[in-house]
Image (cartoon, rainbow, N blue to C red; front, side, top):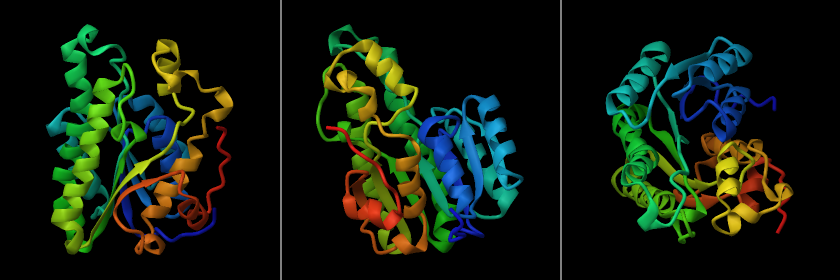
Length: 256
């Protein structure tokens, strides 16, 4: 990708150490964006930053910790002088199991990471995004719209993210903030290891060839941050949207 349509802008990617987040960092850098990449594990971030160049800032951050998230946003602005795009990609799938057999602390941790962590990031980033207008992409899921056996925590967290995105649009849509809840589909990431091991619902039975590569959703998310996507209505959108993929220049084959 040779386009530089994000040149001069700054993006903060939460959950950037692997999977969609790492692929997204590459896609944003290819479009010319300056980047802060955040995750709990520092070593993969350092390796990614070394590969992508000097305009990438690796940040150790647990999104469940409000102070750590606020510090990550502050470090981003201190390094680059601005913030234009926030991508809330950090997430966990565990605990997987029937609700009455689930550890309440693990259940609460899933909500804290997947939903409250996204709120922490929005809360810290919005004062900076509002200076020029900006983009927030919450990595959503079809699980936020329908229950799946064994995934009560994950489904609840993603349903909450749907409403968080709607609240962002209601409160900030007319103030220059574009907010999207993007469902990436069933992606070939480390999360799928836990899903397949649990064997709890039909998602765990999907053949390997049905799992799409992380570069596909990453490409769409990066495009959503560009001026070209300014006419795309905020709210929920999906990798399954043929027109969205066409405009983003992303090709993917779905199996089943």
